[in-house]
Length: 186
Image (cartoon, rainbow, N blue to C red):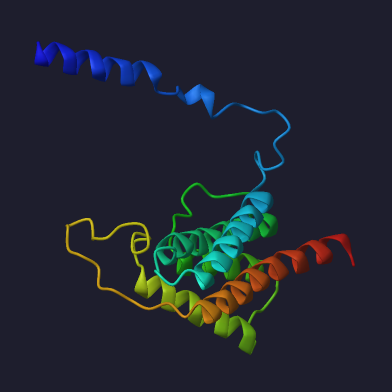
């Protein structure tokens, strides 16, 4: 009797669960669909929104989700900028921020642009620092490495994090805009 009751109770739960179609549906007028720039911008906005919340939250529980959005925002911004400069996205770009930034610099060099100013060097240094801190893009998403070793704790200076995000995304977007202006003859 007890096992039958448990099965019936589980069955009721399963029947009442929502189906995927209930909360995800295709939409033909989605401004993010297929747009690298809009997707990157949406992650920038998502980072900023959770950054505001994380600054007020004393528990620290929002720091990891915020850093995940921060890193994804940087990756998408770099990929969107590479696409804008080169006219396409290479399937093999990967997720390493330092490689993405190097690819953006190389694409600009191929067009005769030389990025050797102090601002670019600061951006490159920040990207190298975050890549070294999170080499597999897992540091902010999981509590342990893929081998099961726990990650060490850390402190994030939220104000400096916001400034780094602004500097990196602004440089990458500006690099793409400069190419667009040169192509238009502005």
